[in-house]
Length: 545
Image (tube, rainbow, N blue to C red; front, side, top):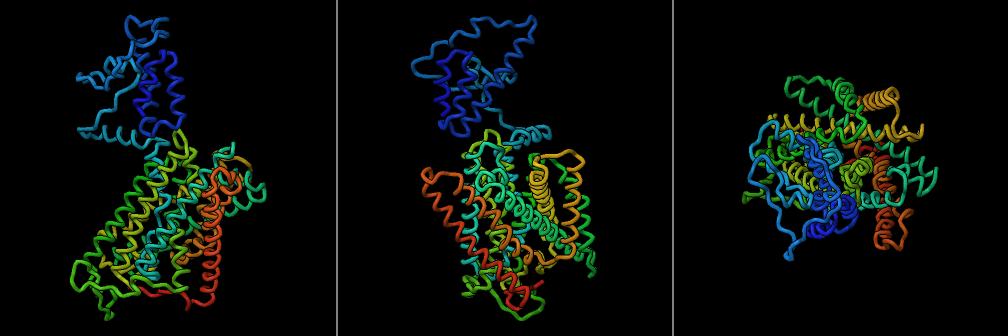
């Protein structure tokens, strides 16, 4: 692709190169790397011209410089680009002719200043890498803590299949959501899509459903943070008294509220990098402790349970139920958790809007790489967390008896940090949908902006202070508002906005997946209601804590 750009631009007068580059960037001939390479041409040209003007005596361009064609191109084609040996210059004569910068020099010697420049270069606002990190932290969060319990009630094989199935449904819904946004002229958002697809009634339903989902997600993350920090406090202090409610209010007031005042999701991209690092550390800690505790029966509080789950030993064995356990109660309890684990649809459109050189292809790159990371992390946490404790796996994996190993305590704090950086994104989307729903504005002044944020965080904190069952909260969200927001509405937008003849296979895929998920979600919701009436139907209520 870069060779095409070079050949094309070499034949044009200098005055037409900027238009030629812009035209090429809007075509499908260039891949992302070539597009990134050519997009810097205009900036470099302007900086070189500014250097010429600043010379003493100043350089005055002539008509010949502006309109004369470039020197003849040799028959062999343009020469390869090379950098000068002189460290004071980044350009050679050929580069000045074709008006294209060299590739940036590598950061050979790392210093704090160069590290800062590297981070600014790679994670600039709206970049692909920055968007990937932001989306990953929207996906990975409190759901990772309950994935091992979902493996417990469904088995390793069935649990892995359901996890992959939920990831596939998530990718389809994100694709349908982004693709449908091409068929509206307004700013891509759930409300604008619903107005175009079904009118004001659908728009009101979408806004209310989306706000309920974001509200419930915020509550669940506060529950996760409070519960984990409470466990850390009990281990460190050696006391049995709980400070769960104080921790929930403290996290909400001193961490979530200040971060939620941000007006742009790009402001959280560096926090997203920290959150991803914390989630990766949790995964690593669960894997390391599997190798420590896989044959340690004392983790079951002295119960006489013999197990051999160290896969490198000859006596390694797993029962049939450990591999595949399909029961109606187990399936209806685990599937909502897998669905909730990939909940990120409300955050995708704001990321898509802020993406540089926005296109479906570039957004697909962000979605694919984010899901790859999330699936890998969930698989490792789910398998190794379940195999370590088997039938003793708790609804929150950090509630299990890890013998007070320090890396588990550190990972508990780190996953709380990850949740804390996810919460402002939920508040951001909730506030945006509320302002659009109430006053038809995407952003309001600072005073109502602060009041809305404060009220939402306070109400969520009060509810989270009186709820402590994380898997129960995730089960309700995964069977009610989450399937509607994450799967029903994106598929409906695609079916109503995209002509069937433009993408017939995807149109039918959207319809079938929507019907299947609606049926599964309805069954899971009815089971959750019945489980409240008769708690005995809940599978795996005991654990080795």
